[in-house]
Amino acid sequence: MKKSCIGLLIAALGVIPATGFAQVKVGAKAEAGATIDADEGDAKAGGEAKGSGAAAAGEGDLGAEGEGVGDICKIDPAACPVLDMKKEAARPIKESIYAVQQLYVMRARRVEFNPWWNATSLNDQFVQHKGPGIGINYYITNVLGIGANFRYYAPFNADSKFNGQVRRAARVAVPLNEYQWGASLDFNYVFAYGKFAGFGDFIFEYDAYVLGGVGALSTRPIAVIDPDNRNFAYKPKLAFDIGLGLRIFLSKWFAVNIAIKDYGYNEQLENLQTNEVDPSKQSDWLGKNSFTQNVELQTGLSLFVPFSFDYRLPK
Amino acid sequence: MTRNPRFTKRLLTALTAGLALLGITERSQAQELYLTGPLAGAPAVRKLRLYRQTRFEIAPAVSFTLLDEYQRTILLGARMQFNFTDWLAIGGWGALGSAIRLPTALTDNIQTVNQQRQAQEAPCVGVNSPACAGPNLTSRLTGVNLGKNLKDQLGGIDWVVAPQLTLTPLRGKLALFQSIYLDTDFYISAGPAFIGVTERANCNPCVGKFKTASRTAIAPTAALGLSFYVNKWSALGFEYRLLPFAWNIGGFDTAGGGKDNQFPDNKISDADQRFRVNQMMTISYNFYLPTQYKVSE
Image 1 (tube, rainbow over the protein chains, first blue to last red):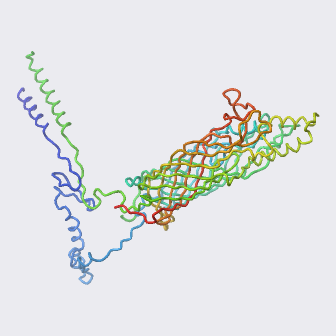
Image 2: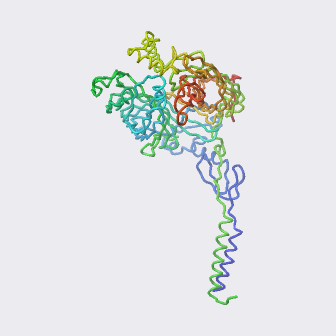
């Protein structure tokens, strides 16, 4: 038994000097391991046949005198292509290179889930209408989609401190409104796509889209003229929206989504006059209507389902 | 020293296993892929048009302030910088804001009410009657804050000079409607800003005193921008800029008294300057000199 253990110990010691040969850098000669030709997608042992792979493949496919298309030549000698490879190689090539070859992300027949947070109201310095939202879009083609979205504002409306300061300083009250929820049906159109190289090193893709639609926005006035007597209920109004967005793709199904959307609707403002005889008379609480636009900056994510897709043509 | 054979056996086995483990972990090395062919070791982008590298940039620009409470300012100016590399530039942005100022609806609204009050108040000057109690009270309550014309006491940005460093981390191209292709880049600028501000002058007492005074504020500034290259020597630029500093935009007495100095103190002082993250959007047309760009390997 002792002998077997000693044998094992010697075997273990033998393991210590064993060294795995790591691959050397590109361009250096390999001592061991596989060689993968990036263009051929072909593995060759020992690093041999370097540089010959491309030539060999080329000749195999369509060599001089049509050697590589023997089957065609046997079936129909008249259709047998005869090419002088030296002459063909000398011919000037004007290769067309497209700005974006094989789009990184295909949207056609995929569903996009787009949760977001309304980071700020870009044109309302008096009440910020923040809140979460979610959009679901189905892309009919690669650039055209239809979708629906829902936004929830109620607990997140923020009446600016500035409003109180103005009321106190100038003795002028400005009618204010807050939102409860919004929903709309939209068309999306992807009008631009491209790619960025970060410091010339890593590359990511992005696209830009416009959207437009119709829906509803539930709002109410904040009682500032006569807050002791007035208490408004939320009421949905017809709302139109247009927007411009940018998606930065981190993978083929996941993107960061930033959008600016403008929701236009007819707002009912609080009446600047008070009914001193009967301030509880609700029909006197509302004043004039005003077409109002709320421009929101929304920051969120896009998740495309199904997660993968196939290209119609190879690259 | 023990003579127990079982102990010796266990000791040798443990020692063997330990050495074997040490041997495997210490000397084993990972295998790397050996790439050959034209793509092996190639940069992510070849033949990149270096629109910025060692080029001087002059960009006339128009800036529009955002989320203004009392008046919008349109600043006319330019950005000038030298691009040492395609991703690093030093230069500055300067603009004048005193030329074009547009009052907001709030300003018009307050001024309308202010004029109505002045009309009601006029026959009541020096009159102590019940009919004049209202106008006199309103006049007293707003005496520190409202002059004859609100627009005359509003604060404004007169000029801005901002030396800045610009980093351009992203370069790319854009396909518009699948037919127009544009080279683009995304940049970030940052630096200190010197801002000429006109605002209501400090006063105590302040009733009837609505003169303005100028000062220079120093604040950090940062901008995010996109350039769309139209040709070899020019580009269209869009920029979003932040310019945070404290100033008295309305000329009102809003702070300086009461708890935490959050209540009016009937005088205009530095306490009435409100910290505000001033925002603006800029549209520029950028010219690059020399007119020919370089191309990377």
